[in-house]
Image 1 (tube, rainbow, N blue to C red):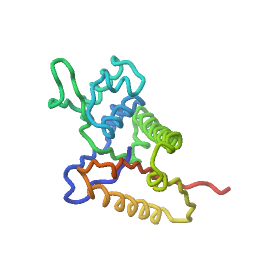
Image 2: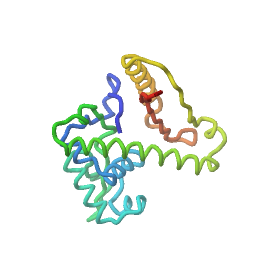
Image 3: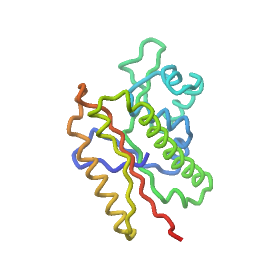
Image 4: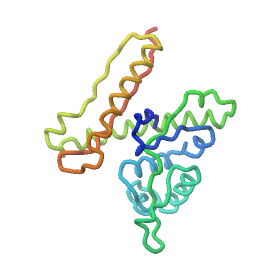
Length: 200
């Protein structure tokens, strides 16, 4: 998923800019879901990921090895016992460049299309999961959810500036309570979708 660069001095967060080779290694629906699950939920075995994602452990094992070959995941030796292999994400986020859409290699352009559409699909699924489970959360959490949208008239430069400011604001909240897991904290997912539309 495209993410902002880490703030200066924030070395705990690792972001991987996607190049043509790494994009082709990641642009697969199951690989993207595996990486997202490890990033959000922490280390797991191939069998645990298979159960969570409704896949076979053979499929998750294969695609985890492919992700490892491209540097997106790695072994978690602190958790492994015997033959049980635990995996963890080696990145906190990925950076996507629009230049990948115009790469001379059609395979790269196809991977770019797949990647972006899969990101949009995962965002839609996350919103649907929240709407389907919102009643299970205390009211104080339900009140913090937001499904707002706006329509602005901007130049390309203004739109880019707005995105940068929003990214900077979100990044400023990342380290407020980095290691705190209490009943008063929860993972918060934020999606930013900004795009022009025709009015013809």
